[in-house]
Amino acid sequence: MIQGFMPRLLHTKQGASDARVVSLPAPVLHQQAGARLRQLIVEGSIEPGTKLNERALAEQLRVSRTPLREAIRMLAAEGLVELLPNRGAVAAQLSAKDIADTFEVIAGLEGQSGELAAERIDDAALSEIRALHYEMLAAHARRDLPTYYRLNAAIHNQINAAARNPVLTHTYLTVNARLQALRFRSNFDEGKWLRAVQEHERMIELLCARDGPRLRKVMVTHLEHKRDAVLALLASAEAAAKKARA
Image (cartoon, rainbow, N blue to C red; front, side, top):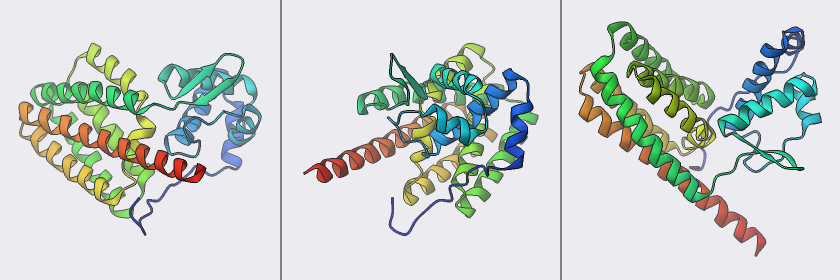
């Protein structure tokens, strides 16, 4: 991270509003718990490889063990959590090769989504994506990374939806779920975050111009830059850990 730069990491406040969650029907309750647990993992409050303490999490999320376990299983299906036999659950930790392989796949899926969306998107969907883009720019100006990431992810999801290919969407959502935490952290470097914003500006321009082939190239490059940023963070963390052990 560039010295002196710190994105705003905003977390849900605990309080009376959380207490109301326990009165929700069980299916809704575990989904609420899953959403909040996902946020903790994606935003780095729970580091990769960390064992999930059910008692502490149940207290923090204001739920009982049953919906919490359902939430953990839900995130395991997404790839954010690993279930270990006789050892409970841990936040997923991908190797450098896993990261490179997964980004290689998601880059292709995002490129195809962009090209098809440019051909098939309607005016209403395009207007919605542009509105999200302007909100995202405002979040970047405030250095509000959680809000920026939420809007950024919504833009990528809506471009994928505009491709109007259910098989592509299912595959994209499945693969992308494993990368949420890593994509969030790729913006910790100020220079790389600014470059990502500039790439999004170009993506919106090409989508409005209905230029599918060029949009495909920009989106693939965008994901390759994300991959490189994540691998650089991983290498830096490993070097720091090695130095600490020496």
